[in-house]
Length: 505
Image (cartoon, rainbow, N blue to C red):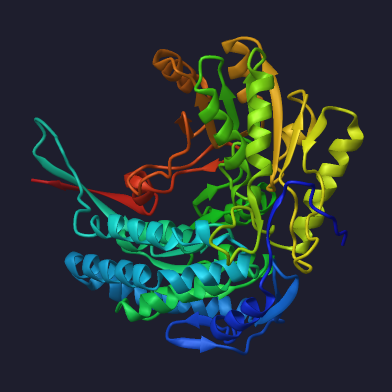
């Protein structure tokens, strides 16, 4: 693994390795799978040595699930779902409210766990438990308001109506970067709809997922309603293939999604897929250039660029290109880089050595292509703070839309800059990817904002900034960015199926 020295001007937040080790002993020392009320420490699969991405050191021994544990978890969920569905709707509502309250109360420790397990900076991790509470409270409010519909039939003498019902057992396959917020968005909707959930967490971020399951037990949800297993591709395939799993909700990458779809097709199991993106951020000449530059220099680098909605393609009008690039570059260079446990850190490490090597490989390939040039960054950055997986925030300028680095999802702190000359070209460039998750528009013209938003092929559009969507808003992408929605009423409907009842009178 290569190591580099940050460029002059980079703001380094030194790693406090002793603090990392102490917190790991306190918060991550005992790991297990949660199946029903059982804390399972002996399984049919190998263990995984979990590495702290900020230090590069092993910090915990992770229990991994095999086929036997998948079967146990699903059986536990089947039994618990029957109990859960027998509860009155207001009882289910109140239980989810209790869970939301516990998640909020546990917020500081949960945030620290996410910083240790995945390198999520505390400046971001601290807000994720609050987001989780928002989702759980929002969906709790639906638990006693799920209603069918009477279908008018006239003049025939009959009564026809619909019954919204849960699927039964939902497999929630989570990724590492959303932590407890992502689990609450999936789990809150599925549970409010009356389902049980088997969470399959990644081995890179298992600790916050198990903590979510423990909080569900403390909130008084039936044991087994939220089971948490940890595993790799084999465990995921066994879960998707299981005959008692009636729906799958997955967040992650395209290649894994293809495998899930192929496996789910065997039993025609429906899926929700929340995948990646290569989202364009269009800066028109009439935009607030100072605000647009701050956005362009900082937002793609948050969470070290490991966010599906990252505005990683900056599409800027040729007349303001130089101003925007100069200002955005200054913002990027000033971002504090380093220890995720330091509240001042904005850019932490990437999640694993494999990701670190892959991202640096993509940067090297782009450099060697002869297309565009590096404005800032472009190297590893771990000089004075151990063996963590840090990469300098990197900006490529002078690119064409078809260039490799401008087309592929890097999932790292890399911004690609492309210029345009008119509105039609800007829209075409923004849509010129296989993905369709998000789109960003910077303009002072409200008519243009509406006009361009209507033409962008993406599921989420943000104008003049980035807003964390409320729990009531639906989220999901087009094209390779996914199928279905999470969040909002649309996210609840993903976990309900309609039964029609016809009664002649």
